[in-house]
Amino acid sequence: MHLEVFKYQGTGNDFVIIDNRAGNIQLQKEEIHFLCDRRFGIGADGLMLLNTLPGYDFEMKYYNADGSESTMCGNGGRCLTRFAYDCGLRADTYHFMAIDGPHKAFFGKNDWIHLKMKSVDHISTDHQAWIVDTGSPHYIKQVHDIKNLNVFEVGRAIRYSKDFEKEGINVNFVELDNKKIIVRTYERGVEDETYSCGTGVTAAALVFAHNENGFNRVEIETKGGHLAVEFNKVGDQKFENIWLCGPATFVFKTNIYLPSTND
Image 1 (cartoon, rainbow, N blue to C red):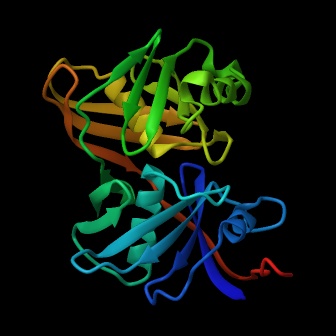
Image 2 (cartoon, rainbow, N blue to C red):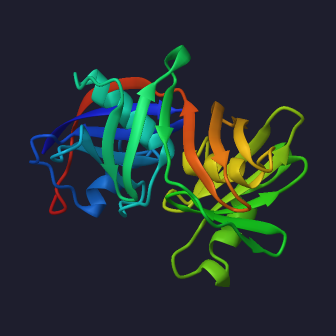
Image 3 (cartoon, rainbow, N blue to C red):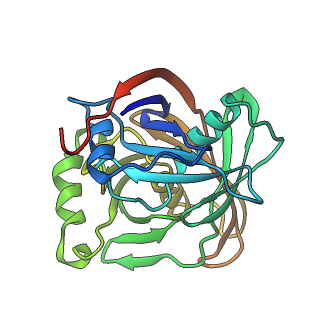
């Protein structure tokens, strides 16, 4: 089978995207893994289908690089919004459905895409770390000298530890700066460090909110570039009106032969 595929990236978090508005594309786990493979396929942190859904501008269907269906991906949502725009779907504010529920997105200054995330009403602690669900589960740990941290080794040990062995968890390391936070992430499903993780930086921003209550904007540095998270803190652990803000960029379009599992 030959497929027309597109590649987009948001601060280095890259995705294979397929226009499935006709509803005729059904991929097996092995096929998704092949397309995301950086040696034998296109190469990406994940794969998304742009689907139609009555009452919404589109539906986001997201898969991890290993072919498993994933929880929410923030950078993926921003990239799929850009793809929808490039496909001719135009709206002042996009309304789309993802696995964790409905989302909104719009284009802001400097062509950044602002994606509304789900509200958060609980942050739990785990020894000297925090656990937050921002559409995907995240482990947040403050560190020093993040530049020299072995994110793969340390992150993998936490991700596969006994406490999280059932479903796994994304592991984020955070270093505080005077004007920003620096975040590096080990992502489950990719099973490696990614250049950026949208739901991860959102979780980190909520943990390190500057104001006790009221509006916050947290600037974030990742390996792949700059992001920002805006939100209202309305209680001890309650956060609403959460927006993940950053760039989303078209990389290339190509056609690829997808071998069947029988080949």
